[in-house]
Length: 445
Image (cartoon, rainbow, N blue to C red; front, top):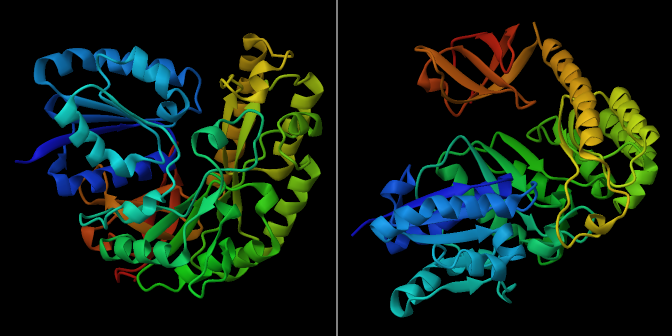
């Protein structure tokens, strides 16, 4: 009999990818997706530990599931980084609701853990880093995917930024072999994907075994993927400035499929704050990297991450961040108030910044970023952009896709455009999207 599976995903794109693979793992065991937890035989909360009060949000969700579990006997699993970081406490506090607590390195063992609960009852806690590679145990997916798809190529991080929990929840850097990545990429293309976003906590630190057994770097992987039939576009996230080497910059110059939109987090424009963050690069290092990238790919647009109110951040440090933003000119950015992550060095620093100061600084920074994003979007007006069409639009006779810069674009068109790249003249810049006109009626491949 078919059982129903509901997965609620928190956080980053890697969690989105992990959720899809958990569904793949469970499909051969009779689990089919459902849209609501009320219909589910198994509910999985795939958690993220990056945001403030992440664990408390999980406990709140478990509280909401308590009645559902009592009424239907629904099995509940907590997966992801909160499970990894706070597994024992989560198992204790959620004992009456959470049947399974499993870290991101062990979700391939879900069928085994479910069977154990069915046989023995009780609760299963699996948060050790297993000796085997989870990717070796994942089945090939068989269902349809969208025009765009995620593909994890690297996990973990060795950078140990003082604010970040990733090295503790995802472990040390580990890269998948090129052959395994190509196999999954071909499978995704066969299922309908035309754009792949390569994922990793520190993705451009990729160092995997090449097809000849010799180590391959991230640039070599990109070039190999770009040669696959049917793949139109490649993106990647999240990258680190210290791993933006000559070969990768050259790939941005040479590889047509590699989109001219790069998310390159800097976090701060102050060298003092960057040192306290253990970023191991200066603001000028970042400026030099951006200059080299823009020389190699003049149409490159940048996105970044910023943390305001990091412990010890002075007014002068914040002004240095604003100066960097004004100089670089970002197409978009993600910005956050610093929040303590238990177990990280920054959480015990004595120079914590008052919440009111953090809120004020964040508002100023976001205002500047919003102006830059609006200016970048306005600059696309009257340009002809290649658009990869993904789905029908909200209005009848409308179709939507993405520009090379990830901007939503909608035009009058039919479903025949989906999965194809087509030139569009941008006519109108809206608040959250672009509107344009197809230049010809023929569908470009």
